[in-house]
Image: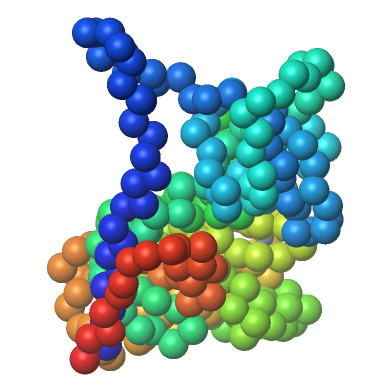
Length: 273
Ligand SMILES: [Zn+2]
């Protein structure tokens, strides 16, 4: 079963009003505003200054300051204002919620074989403010691997495997993708964790997690369980699709709905056979 999501772009008209001048002055500067942002996690609304984005009501944003890294939603936008700039923190990123592509049912997750449908960085931004630089981290690997089919070979301590199993059952593995053998996953724990690995012929290598664990952690173990399940479903129901594209991504159903569908005022999707 597959469905397509194809939304007509919401063209809130940003066209510059025609000025009585022959030169068409295309204003690329975003309109400065003071916005009211609601932070669900704190149940509070605060004001921020914005000079970087063309914000719309309902946009999901990240800000600087004390609530840095916390997702907020734009509740009000004021274009007429006078503020003391030093009193205000700014909006630093807007989440791109546009998603389009073909998705297939795979248990708790939707799967796509289209690289454009769910790019990793875009999905990560649903949960974490984009970092300016991605090269702050360095990782190493001893080159040893293990078989995804024999996770018991890993000799993971019971406490870790049990917590990892709970994470897996609770669908805390929000996203996984494998692109040309390079795997990435996003796991929801106390924080958001990024797990990376290499995948080839059923073997996993270079498994790392952003929780800075030195041995295998519950996040990694949960990802392995989710990966095993998802690959099993792909093989059973969409045989050959992963091999053909050398790519798949899987996203928890509720994540796709929360971000890509909630808040849309128009558009449609089709459920296939
Ligand atoms: Zn971890």
